[in-house]
Structures are given as structure tokens and as C-alpha cells.
Amino acid sequence: MTRAFVVREHGGPEQLKLEQVEVPAPGPGQLKISNKAIGLNFVDVYQRTGLYKLPLPFVAGNEGAGEVIAVGPDVTGFKVGDRVAYQGPVGAYADERLLPADKAKHLPDGITYEVAAASLLKGATAFYLLHWTYALKAGETILVHAAAGGTGQILTQWAKAIGATVIGAAGSEEKCEIVRQNGADLAINYKTDNFLERVKEFTGGKGVDVVYDGVGQATFEPSLDCLRVRGLMVSFGNASGPVSIPRLGILADKGSLYVTRPTGAGYFRAPEDLRTAASALFNMIELGKIKIAIGQTRPLAEAVEAQMALEARETTGSTLLLP
Image 1: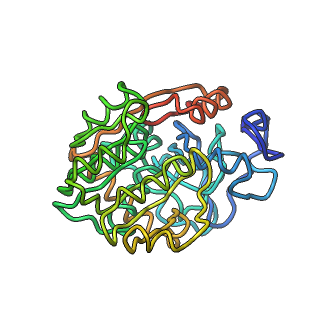
Image 2: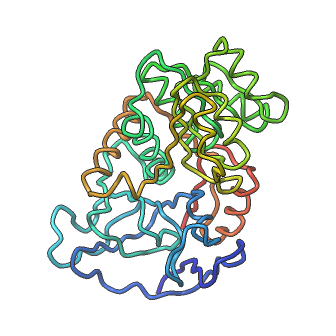
């Protein structure tokens, strides 16, 4: 038996129930993992609330790192004692779990369990956003919303490593200081600044090439006005609520804009896709070009409180749950 947070009904944080569950021996194609660190992400919240539908019940959590403690039949490339990280499928909020072997990524010696669990999902997201959703080039300008968050910090640092100009927006002066420390060329405080006016001023009225928006409803429409003609709006999260476009013609009115709503499920359809992203991420970390900020750690038993803090926008960087 192992501890796990089970969701049996969609709803608020109280639907996360700490239970004792049985984790059987791994079947064909599976690994049994002893988690050493577990990452917290907004997708965990979306699945709990039912915004992203999953069959009930399920064990929450999409990201973690740990040690292989058993290997299923026909699995090659892994052995007991291997250090691995993973992102998706659900089941991470637990001391132990079963995982499809093709979802596991070997950890380089220089990457700790904590750094891996704090960065793989967010960093793989940043990878596909910057390389596959839009192939960002040196000299281009982007706007990153929630730039002091886990994904936002990685996006900012990676974009700067590419050679882009980065405008980062965050919800307090303390968070804006984090944005600056990560190399952003301009930090905008949502509470005191009009981010549209600041972006237009900074770009001489032209607008940015791409907006990366994980906030959603609160920032979507003003962000369209931050784009240059034929610019790209990348809406990849719903922290403030889901986005809808009541009239498609708004994209024509604002300059023949493009909009996309990417997800990891869409980009990591084959095991090698995620391994490509993970290898690129871990290489950037080992080279010192991306630093992973672990803003908060909590024991696994405090997963409810951790999700509440995330929803309240009280966190910076990544949050870890430690078994």
C-alpha cells in the first residue's frame, strides 16, 4: 500500500483525498517508481475541477522524478535503481506509482530529482512553445504572461538564450524583480501598469511577434492588441479562466492575427518527441543557461494547500511536493 491523493469527484481542492492505495507489480511495458519529488502544475488543477475531463477516479499529478524499483516484462532500457523523470500520465501525487516505460526519461548525473520534478513538464512546454509552436529567432520580440511562474521563468531564460527580446508581465513588484533577474528586457506589473500601453511604448507602436499566455481569460483580448500585424497569440493555459472568441473576425480587425491553443498531448504524441524536449531542457540546465527556481516545497500530505496557493497566484517559480 502507498499514500496517494485520489480525485473521486470533480470540484474544489477538497476533492483531493489522501488515501492508501495498492500499487501492483508492473505489467508489460511498465515501470514501478518510488517518487522522490513531485511537480505541481496548473494542469493538475484543471483535471481536478473537470475543465480537463479524465475518467473518475484518478490519482492526481502529472510530473515527478524518482527511482525505478521494479521493471515489467518486456521492458528494455531500464533497470532497478535507475533515476528517472516523467511528465504525464496522471498518478504523480503518490509515494509510489506505475508508469509506462515510454514516458520515463533517464536523468543525467548533473540533474537532481528536485530539479527534474520542478522543470520537466514546464521546461518541455517551453521547448515546444519556442521551437515547434513558433520557431523563435534572435532579434524577435515576445510577451510572456505570468513570467515569474515556473513555466514563465523557463520561457524567459530560454528565449533570451535564443537571442530574443523578452517582455515579462507579473502580478507584483517582487515578482517583477524575479522577471528581471531572469533576463527580461522589460518587466510589467499587472497591478500598477497597463501592460498594453507599456508593450506599445516599448515596441514603438509595432507590437510583439508572439504572445505566450498561460493566464487565459483575464489577459487574452488585451494581448491581441499587443501583437504586430500577422503576429501569433499562443494561449497555452487558463489560470484566470478559459478563453473563448465570440467572433472570429476580431483577428482580422486587429491585423490578420494568428491564434493557437497548443497542449503537450498534441506535441508529445510519440515517446521520442518528449525525449527530444527533455534532452534539450536538461542540456540547457547543465550548461547553466536555464536556472530552475524552486519557489516552494511542501510535504506530499499538503497537496491540498499547495494547489490552493497555486490557484491564488501566491507562488513563484516551481512548487514541489516531497514524499
